[in-house]
Length: 255
Image (tube, rainbow, N blue to C red; front, side, top):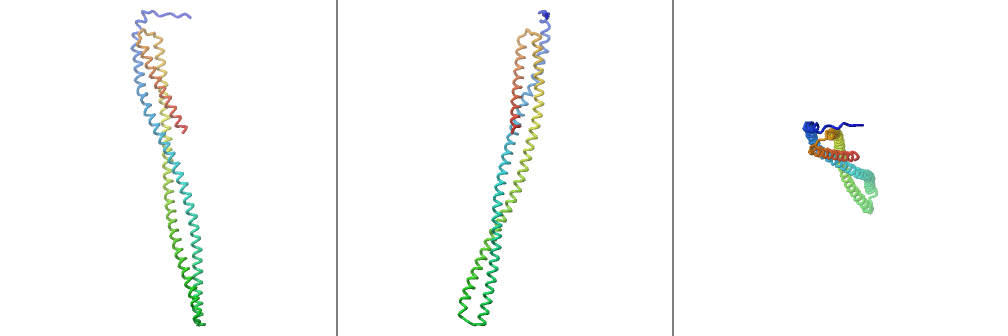
């Protein structure tokens, strides 16, 4: 195909007229890209804060679950000991009651023998037996008091555990809510990033159109290609920042 070359004199007249229009387009693109370029920085900072909050919430949740399991094992131990003490108290009460009955029978028997037989020699043996039984009863009563006190202490500790467990459940619910809020924030940031990427793509297309027009006009002035190249480097820098932000967002989503 044959192309008709334009007259150099016509180019000298047309190009100075097209130069202000091209410069105006470039300045418009620069004004439009400037706020978008800096808009990515606070978005990146917010995303980093959200990532840190999410990690802290997950660590707190794991620590709370570990503490709950430890408390559960401790309360199972207390419950087992409490059941053993309750059984021991019942056994001691039965033994105490049996000794009281034996003591009462021995006292009645001693009175009866004293009245009927009137044998003074038998009294020392009966009195010794009665005294030994009385000491045994006193020892059992003291043991019962200690067991009752220990039972009350275990009961108080069990109540404290139930209270702590309720507080931990409330804390876990709060952590779960914070985790849900963090996920919502991430979704909002993803939507904002998609809008920013769309605007960046439009700006890139406009830049390419501007470069194409600049090459077609074959501007004799050396400043215009330099300006176009400068704006292109700005657009490439914004594109690189956008790609880096997308990678950070993907890494947060994988967590």
